[in-house]
Length: 483
Image 1 (cartoon, rainbow, N blue to C red):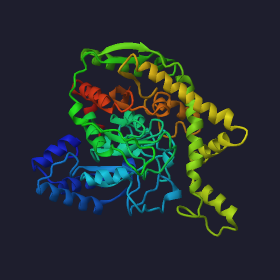
Image 2 (image 1 turned 30 degrees about the vertical axis):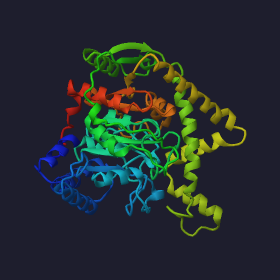
Image 3 (image 1 turned 60 degrees about the vertical axis):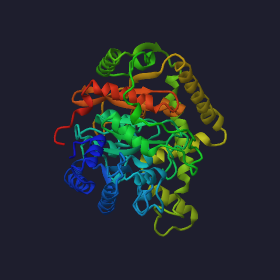
Image 4 (image 1 turned 90 degrees about the vertical axis):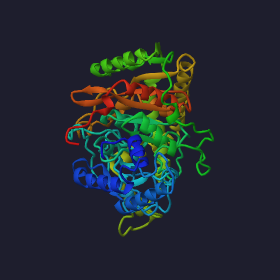
């Protein structure tokens, strides 16, 4: 059962080959057996899961037949879940139980999805390795000595290890796509505003976006269908019709114009990954796609711009965690200032403190124009590059990451080296574009991903291309040894 995709589970439940309750029990037992190796979960919710599974079985017995009805999933631990710990991977929120469900959680629950638990993540989604979590690092099931990517590494490791078929995740600078690449999954960051951010604890509000992590594009289409849609509670949500993503998977790629930016293939890219990307291009050409070289001239400025904007927004968003209203509170504070200092110093980890300090500096008097304002201008130039490129091509293709997953601890003493691993992913967040990573092969036994970018609200186009690619390749079917 644990090898089934979401689509296969939906068919099996519809054909009454098994019940949601039976499947849920199998997966909960598998998590209990295997997750101690991975540390991919922060909280398990077996009572809730079995209750939801029984309810889903009852709904199916009454004639309902939705694609997510009875399907087991997990939520990244920054989606608020009513009465369940929502920690953001931080000591600051270790004791926080959300008083409501995030819109994504509520929508998926209404569709009949079964919540197995909350997955581990970099603290407040700040990181590219899932090593900054208060609950310990997550291990990559393809090699337990390597990182699974971040910040959605818990969701990625759990799905890759076949502990469950799919999970929710979030992407601020690549945190869905990069772990997908590192763990041989398909991960989709939707257009900014496509998926509600209400109840999704913020890191950088103008960049954060929720999305699906699964083994196939078909499964991502199913999960995104349940997540997407306008939400009046979210001022950044866009009232745009949501298409039937599954219905669009089988479109022909004949004549599809694929742009390949020359800037993607510079000195920082592992040449073995470059070879795999070129193999993917050849595969898409066989399916009728037309390849065109393009240029994204401002890509080189994206990392410094991102690492000004994101920490600036984080310093504002995280100011609410002050030891007064909720979250960690220091013991016996001498006065209000001592309460603030010690609560925040004890509650936040090193990476979060580093980014808060950078952000506060960038927004401070005398430096706002020099740093934050200039970074926003670069952001506009990055967006303009994409708009010009999409006048010539339908999608943009390149590597998801410049290197395969690195060893645990390898970049801990040099955070900038980890930041540079986001070079191909952060531009989509700066511009608000949809992006997808899909499996493209292996380097030294570690998975490699190829990234696709599309114009606004063209998630269906990305899923169509990825699905057609996966019908003609088998990288996405590979399973890590021991799982």
